Length: 307
Length: 188
Image (cartoon, rainbow over all chains, first blue to last red):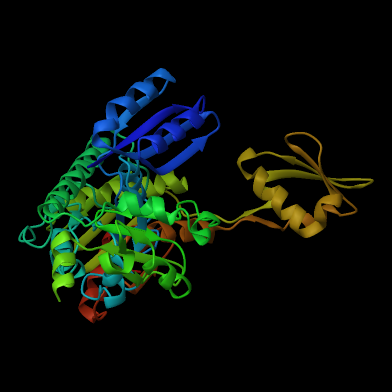
């Protein structure tokens, strides 16, 4: 089983680090370099983790646990207007990024107002592509309670972040964090930082629960293994986007156009099977330039074989 | 500045008082405002903001904030109130272009080939701008969906009523009454 770690240190001997990751059968999920500092998120086979930790220490860096690595999370606000953006939505997104998640900030097209707020089917479909969604609503209890329809049909786990504590929404979302609400500046004060930590902890718990559910009927192959194979495709290796492949809990988002590459993706061989037979490959609802790969579970693959 | 909140939602009242104060601070208008009264009924939903400014914002001419004198090469200004210096320079640059405007020292500015008589009546600061900034602060603070709005403005009191539903006469009367009480009892 793969475990996800983050190396935080200098660029010194980083080539050796990449080689070691490759040698032990691991995969680099994400790397970001700022001048002489480097952060590398990697998925490593469980038994090789001590080897990697020792090497990271030897080259002067540290390893951190990143409980949200390998996830893509949407932070959703009612609109993109200055009433809702950028604070505290961006603060929450940044907090989750520090724990290893890839985050996306999203505003609804018609989410404003109390009685007129709406979410479109297209928006729900987009949110359902992510591993979890954080919904950020406002300060008034009655308003928050009346906006249940924004998230009650989202299939992925929802963490609701609000100002006043709402009642009667416990069944409609996985966690509720109250005491944040609208802000006109960054969340810098200690009590605000505490709230951000609370939101991150709730999200980590939600992701853990989802991982546990997936483990009950494990995926046919770990997404990190498919990532390694995808990196050999020309369209991916020449892709200029900062993260051309994003891991999900049950699959991946690969940022190449679906129509042009679906055949190539389906024919990738993994454990003697076509990827098209062990995963569901579909276009992303966000744009034509991304493709979603959802890996089937072992029982789904067995069922498919029988049929 | 005194902020008085009225409404059934305690958390919302405290949060919006804090939010409005921070927005005013952000715009640098904290000291301009004397009293704020906010009525919030999110269940309806209705929001009324009424704000009394410390003084009636006055229009300032260039001759009010600087000494002007004619020199052989043009007009020479000595800025008396430094707070208006950026506005004076922007105004002169816009009107006469940078080639003709020379800032000699922190307070001294010369404008080539322009007589003092032409500069005296230029408006450096419009009183309306302060009111517009306060209205901007209210709009930033009001929940985004409250698009039906009713405004009352006079010398130093600004009242804005906002709702998501129909703008009824009863609501307008409530706003007028609030505006009247902020003016100290006199009618608009």
